[in-house]
Figure 1: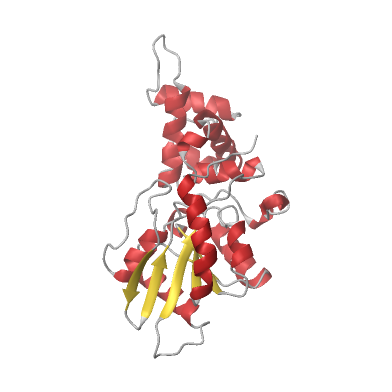
Figure 2: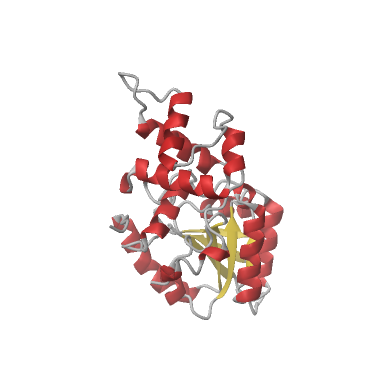
Length: 284
């Protein structure tokens, strides 16, 4: 079964984007540096053909730096798509990315340049807008779908920037892509089974980041061989116990996912360019 999470406001936003995108000069497309491909919206590819664009790999400060560098080479060199890795709260990085985008625009100083910030939920679009504005002009939060309406902010140098609500697509497939999005927090936790999500995350960590697991959970030495055993061991050690002494898998799963999303498990990426051949089905 594929994952579905498409609140009503997303359909409205989708229709607004289709009509508004033709009236802007350039797009800041924000993706999650830990999953740059899975967090790229295929709908945007269809409606933004020919637009000046830069892909911002946000949250690079909690992503695996080697994986991020591989992604930058993939986008900039292999498919000739301008991309930059940033942390949305660092003004210099965000401003440099905007300048790089504006260098693509044939500017007429007499009129405003219109830039739209687009992307899926919870990638940091509103934080980028606040950083560019130098003040809080957009509500932020570490959950998806905080922004519900398009809003405009005027910046110096005759630039208008538009923040847009994050949108997904009605059916997220293949399922692996949905799980990667859910692990990152781009999909509401109500749309997925937390135990399945933690199992997926634990298996990824065991295969790719065993050292991060041991550093965060020193009691995991030696590491369990299976995801289920990992969750159970973490649950026991961290007091996720139900009546009768059984592990509360829901609480243990939530603990692992929280540690992963927050960066407490270290700098981790959920996909690399090497995964593209495994997940060829990302263009829908």
